[in-house]
Length: 547
Image 1 (spheres, rainbow, N blue to C red):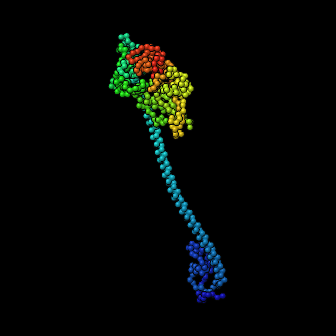
Image 2 (tube, rainbow, N blue to C red):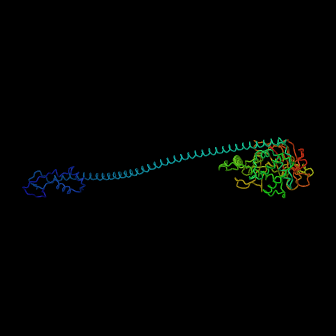
């Protein structure tokens, strides 16, 4: 088989057939330089370019030259090498893909790392804010504790101030008592030298200056109220230019009634009456008023003038809240308010506390209320009808000569009885949110030292009621809180004189010195038997005192 190339005979060319083969270095060169290998001619061209020199080839004289068979073998080897190159190339591509994925992973990792750094930075900032917040809370707690300490110190200072004021008032009171005692001692010594004593019975009358008989009877009854007259004689500070107008006038009346140094059988209440008319024109003697209305006015006016309100005792917001369905809450709130607003000799002697209960018949809840009082008013007509309704009497059993007999205990039973309020007398229930039928009841929570009872006879048929009343009165069955005194003793009665041709009031009083009863009929005073109080005259107002 002939060769396709024809050379000159004398040119000697050596062909290194081993260089025609692709070794590992060639392959690596192809792979590293990213040279695509597609066919044999390309490989041959590469080998001829890099490994065959420029010498001429003598095919005929070169015995080492191998013809076509050797080329076929080399071609096979070359194909194998090409396959290996392709394998390496594929692996290279896979490796590149893997490297690319690794790079992406690295990028993601770096991204997450950066995000993690940002997050850590934010966490660090949050921790800083948290620490600052904790410090702020600690600072607030410190200020709060300091404020609490300051409040405690202020409370202690207020308490100390209150105690100091109490001590000061106590000292002032002791000084005044000492001063009054000294003055009384001096006055008594003066009277003693004249053979006259202040502790002799009060037997001085009051002149009737025109239609004021009920005023004279009231003044004598109040004058025989021992603790009241003792206060005005021993403790009251009289100043002509102060605002205690009515109290000043009453002081002068009591002083003149009990001061036997004047040797007069009676004194004129004209100044008292003029001040009374000026302060309340309704009591000018021209209007038809009951003695009870004047007593109520005088007691309330004396209380206003003599009341001492402690400016340091005030209700706080929690104590001001009242739950009218909680008995203890209502009681405590009322007592605290009462102690603040009622601090006079009048409230101490004549004021008591009433408790009322309204039990709703639909929800069965009970509403409580507490009020103060300085007298009790008994409607005799209503009490008689109550006794008939209860079966305690009928229209004929207790009627003698058109007169109706009523016992004072029947009056208290009526006053404190439990009855059903229906129709127009329904009570509004806050729980049911409407007016409901309720059971109403009244009790005395506390009783005063001096109990004033008005026997309300009305305007018509005033003479038909004969009221019997005991000298010693026991009210134990009518109180809810029996811690105080429940026993009372009669010491004064204001009556309408049945022997007079006109409407005339007189007073029967038990003297606190000799313990005897006297009839005070304006300027005339005479001893009397106790039974005359209700056998000969018509009682209007009863005065009881605790022993």
